[in-house]
Image (cartoon, rainbow, N blue to C red; front, side, top):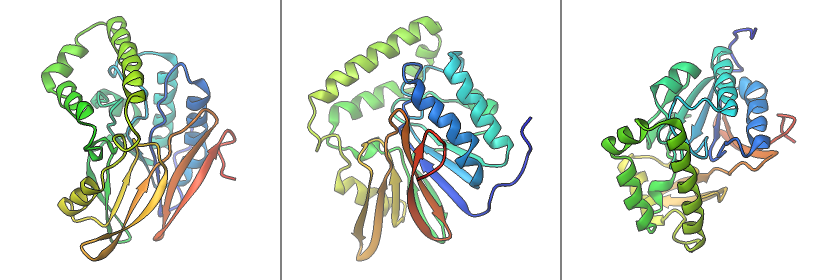
Length: 255
């Protein structure tokens, strides 16, 4: 039984692009260790999309997904709030998943404030405005009717469709240039303007970096989160106005 407690005040964690799947046991075991260790010392954990490599519905009973649900449930029961944003691979996450885990499903994009700084949180795929084929596909599959029809199919059928999508997605990405798949500067500026923000945090592009920007003559920042690989990940940490990146290792503790 896990003791319910409040974590150390003031710390917020940000991760994205874990792409958890049964085929990547090292990554989801690393994530479970992170939930049971490092994440419990924070007030809140934000997961900015693509926690899963292919989420086919909240009724997916794959053993690794059940373990992840339990890990998130234990985390929120222990006092750490968790907010999930949908990604391009797991936009079908729904209310049942949140009820089971205690997590909150946020909108993409969403605005939060850290030390008075308006910060825009996104998965990041909407920033890749040069990738026209993907954006057309995104609009099609997120149509409520298309989603409903997909979720009516059996688990077996949905798994087969998801596997086919992952295969075709990998082939399509190999034909695209790095520029097409990266965030477009004009899109970054547009979203900062629309949401009156001076800090943007996102994933999706798998190009972790901190970009110092100038937005309407004022300093701004774009923080890109790292993809997790097997036995190593990364978390962006905010505490008392200070931002830092920490590695996430198999021990569940930073270097």
